[in-house]
Amino acid sequence: MLLSISAISDDADFTDIETLIDDLDWRDGRETAGAVAREVKDNLQAKMDLPSGRKLRDRLWPFIKDNPIIKAFARPRRYSNLLVSQTADGGHYGAHVDNALMGTGASRMRTDLSFTLFLTSAADYEGGELVIHSASGSQSIKGELGQLVLYPSSSIHEVRPVTNGKRVVCVGWIESLIADPIQRELLFDLENLRVSLRREFAPDAVERITLDKSIANLLRMWSHP
Image 1 (cartoon, rainbow, N blue to C red):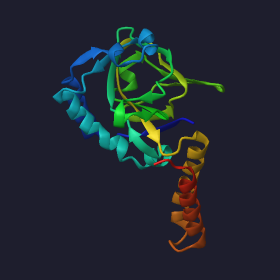
Image 2: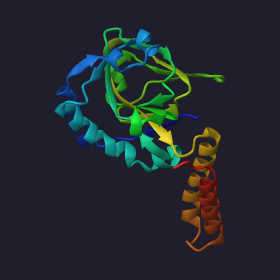
Image 3: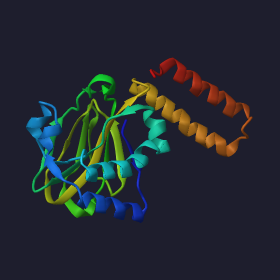
């Protein structure tokens, strides 16, 4: 299941983020790719370990970690470090699958969900579509400024060549408390139902209490803290 949401919408936030992007230093994006993906990757990666990168990272995290829709959909257990990439001048990222495991030691994590947060307007560049392939077909996404797309890390995906302009995005990965994507989707549906019931029923209504119990017990059965 793919989810697309508006994660950033305030003009003041966009202005601040644009200023931080202008201060970034960049390296060859192949340095952050796995052995196979490195062969099909042609972009630049921001040096997030420098002060300019850390400032942008700290500015972006709240839009991701504090978003209630992402919390309900992904059931995050842990996040990867954030990467910011720039693609221009025919750059692209060919078809690939993200590494199943990332990090080392205590920070080692399973990648259940990948996300792309678009930091430039779709009108600012040509090409550059994020294409996600599945057994049911391919989805092509050219996100608007501030749009975030969550999709299964297990999927084959690619970024088409940017033929004009510059595409800047923030990407990362989530390990979920719920490893099974069908179970995650069911819980997300129930959370959306819970939001609807809150508008129609009192807090002590049997409908709300029963749904609360069902969600809690499914989390007990399925989660891996």
